[in-house]
Picture 1 (tube, protein in one colour):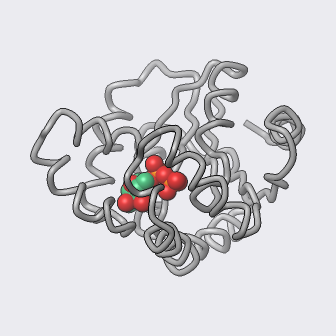
Picture 2 (cartoon, protein in one colour; picture 1 turned 180 degrees about the vertical axis):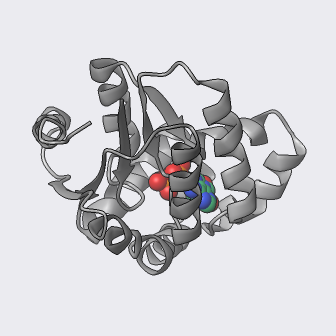
Length: 192
Ligand code: ADP
């Protein structure tokens, strides 16, 4: 089983590369951002609770996000493996994910970190704001806040996975195909 974490700051290209990897390796895609946006669109209580955090660029509380992942993993017991995109984002989430996977006889194969410099991230997100209409992509101060939250709360996960020998740095610049190629090369070195 191949269980990958696609890691990196907002705008690093996690969603784009996730689409490619799920197709190539026949994996299930779990994007907490997409799951949360779906809850908002359906007007659920969970969506309502999450929206105020997302609109400002803050993380949604761990309890909400971890509960959502648990439901998703239990529903997909037959999967070939998973691409986790935008999750985990805190050390508490990473620990819960390890526990949930091991309870089901699974483990993370590797954490693939897409590296892109800040100026390019902001340009990419502002462009996505125009094409996707996502409110959190349309305001530079919200984007800056998300990048800061990433630096403070999410970056420490690099050390968490380094300690397990599961951290892989991947250059996230260049064409989508070139980045995909780098990811495939890294994945081919993973023991599954
Ligand atoms: P991006 O990677 O561009 O920030 P996402 O769709 O992954 O886009 O996330 C959008 C927003 O959804 C985040 O700013 C945050 O508010 C919320 N979110 C997504 N995933 C998580 C998570 N794992 N933990 C907490 N909040 C999350």
